[in-house]
Image 1 (cartoon, helix red, strand yellow):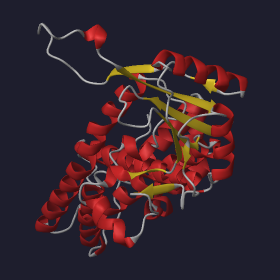
Image 2 (tube, rainbow, N blue to C red):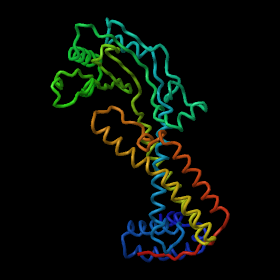
Image 3 (tube, one colour):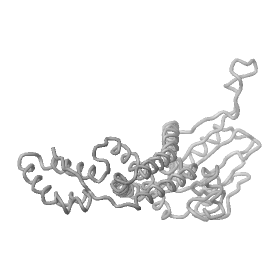
Image 4 (spheres, helix red, strand yellow):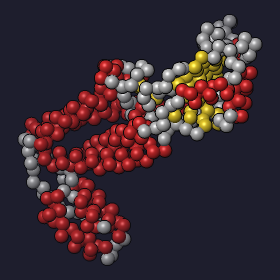
Length: 354
């Protein structure tokens, strides 16, 4: 196992001191726990890959870069898993709606299957949609759905409509979440004509059966369809596996890349070092604010209401809403790597095992 852990060290360093490291590890393994020695060997191997051995900040910078790359890689892995999900079927959805509303007045069902798993403005992502994606409308890139609407009978109140629908869902084998109530409009508290108890309320809730997710909205506004339904797919189980695997691969690749670049730049011209630092810091300032903004908002949203399907991971990272920031950061990092590629630096490190 210890010999495999040597792969964490740079190649030139392994060739020069690999035998010495293994001899030292064998001597320590006889007096210390093997797991502790292995962990210590891995830690120093990862640190040796980084430039500036006397610097402490380089480890923090490498960690920030590695975590960001691992998160983006994990989101891409989940996207790949989502791409292989079972497509939505209009006929199956129509059968479900007719089962829930066998005699629904004003029943209207979308007549076409979605063109892709994820769509933007009703269409699959294409080059024509790139400006929308980059310049303010990235949040329109969302999971495709098939929809239907029903006109509620005039004599049917919202509580009656909710109770009827919940009973039919239960009879059809659906599991449904607690409904959420939202005022149709707001009024000024303390105003004589403001009676919060008299404000009509919209009702929304979700239901699940197998890998089908049904979102339901019962509206108190008579100018719109009284009941709206939208069906989509549940998160595939492969998304969790793909996300975890991509996270680990992305983390290892990012640490290796950062170490490779930092070792090559550390003894280069000071101007090149300064420019590389500016490019790297600027890239992180473009990458991290969307993450730090979007993740708490997404967490609060999911904790405030029940979800049978959490939002895709990339939305937690502010993507693709802030995709322009991500691409600009990638461009700056590419320039920094270009500076690193201009010069090759010899490895010169000291082993510390303790």
